[in-house]
Image (tube, rainbow, N blue to C red; front, top):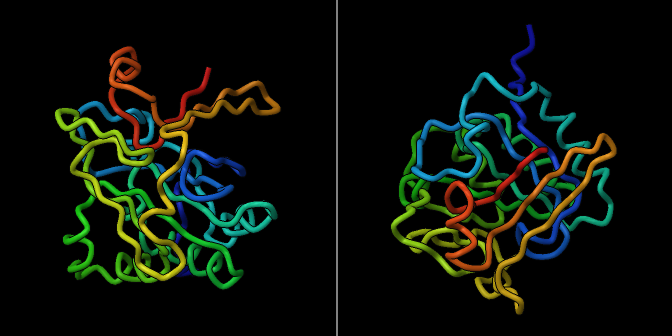
Length: 207
């Protein structure tokens, strides 16, 4: 019997400029143990959803996107499937690409975590956007949905200023071959957020 962990995936986008420096793939994992009020991806919270894939299969999706400098993990909660996602991240790093992860966990909690899978995923990440979404603490940074969140650079590949963008927050609209609309990014102002279900870390919507 295989001991290789599988990964439950909610969605994959091969190309985005709204989820970190440069052109990036985005992988949304399925399942999150946290329940931040106003989460924009409620469909990604149950662990029973999504589709199951091997880490090698998911890594192949990312590496097939030849114009992407790396991948951004979101969800759901990436560190809830850390062991499987660490295998994906390691393959991406070996290929010379970068890895960024959004997480609802505080940086200090992950840094001190005893879980070997979480430590393996941390070791394979270049940067984290860390902290739970707090609706009462609106953020203005292009990648921080609430003011308590922080950007942690784990390797020399990125500096804190690499996550700033001259045009501020952005949203992207991607239409798939099957007509599915994927919306990713952040609204530009608090007034935009009031018309939608909460603040986004990374948002996806299908119609």
